[in-house]
Length: 588
Image (cartoon, rainbow, N blue to C red; front, side):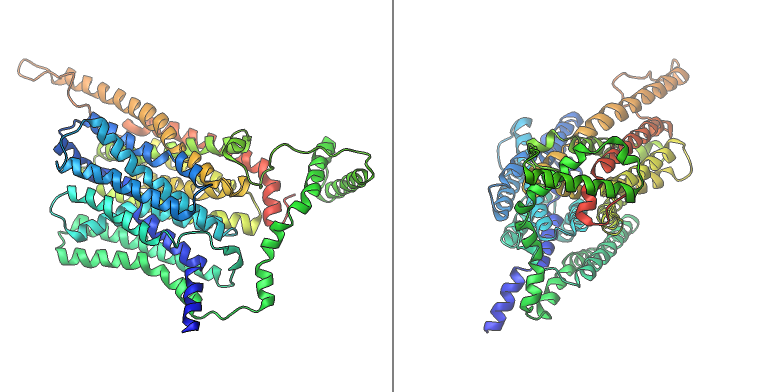
């Protein structure tokens, strides 16, 4: 019995259990992705027009991105406090929305529904903050894979919740709002005391690589399975029994990673004291940081005192000169001949507050690069219905599903790819960001040129590239600016989504689309008008047809992604020494 309790305690404090539970929270937290499914019932029940519904959608997006409260509270509240706050917001916001839509409450004005959906969507920021902070602290040496997998399941949560709703077979669409209010809140409350930092740096195992590979395998199988299910539902008229079986298979794949902590705990043996001391070594190194502060300051003095021509020397000679200068500074400081200047504020790689990070060029460059690239990607996501319609497809559902799958694989693969770049080659993680931005630029260029299969190519490359950013950027920020205020830093960079969407989707893409739509409408009016033909009405819905509707937009976005690549490479150049210190193998 004592042995069982010990095993249970170890299991409860296992970092892989925390990670798996965080994945489950992410899998249920994407209620915002279901707005396209719940908006028709809101529109019909409340009698809204498309403009009013668009306002509701914008407020929902703001709620899902404005995470300043969650980021600030992450520094004073434990993880369970953040998760509980998010669950309460999710339940109250979407619960009130359900009561209004089902007319259990009196009809209320639009601004009340905006507040409800903002509160509900804002709960997602609490879920994301708690999950990312807990798992990045538990896996400090695997930040890329951890962030990628978590963000991947967040992006896939809309499809998962949809399949659960299909399995429930509710009588009306309003029931989906009720499920969104109750389901995620129940999952989060059930897991909120498990998702937390558990000193994961002490739990390093040789099997960690195999565990991550298994998780990646589950992700690939899940993506293929979900894509197959969506295609089947699109092409065939499945009965409810088959739908239930398919949904149960999806849930089984989501739950499958729990076998990792079960196996680790069940077949692990108590570690000898020598091994425990080795596992605790990172903690000893962290404790010794204060003893190295003087050395770090002197090393910064070396950078200030060296002459410009030193950088032009070969690597071996440059290293020799730098070592000599460092030795002189150490001796001079010891003799009191020089006074070492103390830097104000932390250095890159140390813990920054949001205010301190906002005045750093690297942080601003990362943010601007993300605005450009993420805004370009969101333009395709937000306009995919009009894009497919303009080139002759009548149903955009399958393309929406496909780009969501590529987005998921991009987030998972982006974390894995960036980890290889940093660990195996010691290049800064933003190198991976620059590469995926080039891939996105090629996808936009392919569409702009009007080549064959353009919708498939742009959805594949842009979906993968956009998703990869949300694995690479948070991991890069945590490495360059520390974990102490990571919640606030992460929630600030998520503002890149609405900022980029406003610039590239709402202003550029929609403006160009309306220009060509009006031009085509004028031509139709010119050739079709006759005494018996109904003249074109100014208030008639404008529709643009042909590849021209978005080819110019994609050409502009291709150039925007190239600019983002340049900014990313500037960050690479500026942070190469930080990454060489973090991961060894200094770059010459």
